Length: 128
View 1 (cartoon, one colour):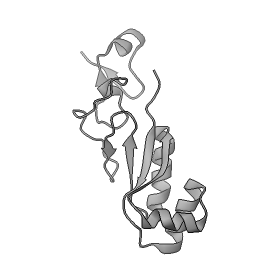
View 2: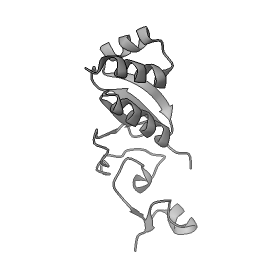
View 3: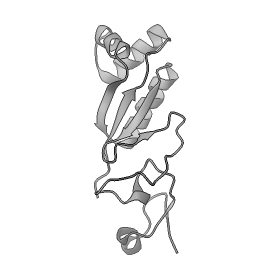
View 4: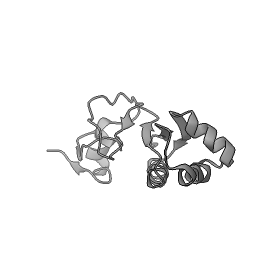
């Protein structure tokens, strides 16, 4: 099963000036001028359609520079909280991804056909 892609969103303009500007330029590949435009137009998309691990690393880099960011799941469109805590699994509406497998939620057990047949998904245990 293919993993969902995530989007890194700049949620608010940053007060950290040059550090924020350099961080946005580094993760987006934009010039400093275009990076400033992106920051000034927040909320705006910094990167989209990237794997969860890459999106998480990008968001952490931006947050260290003082840029408020959020991650959005490309399948269910849920936004992960700014503090990194998992979201409630109930709103997951992806038709492709079983709710317990969504990397955005807090479930750690699953009884789906795939986990029952092939063993638990990484980071999960089989439900009883």
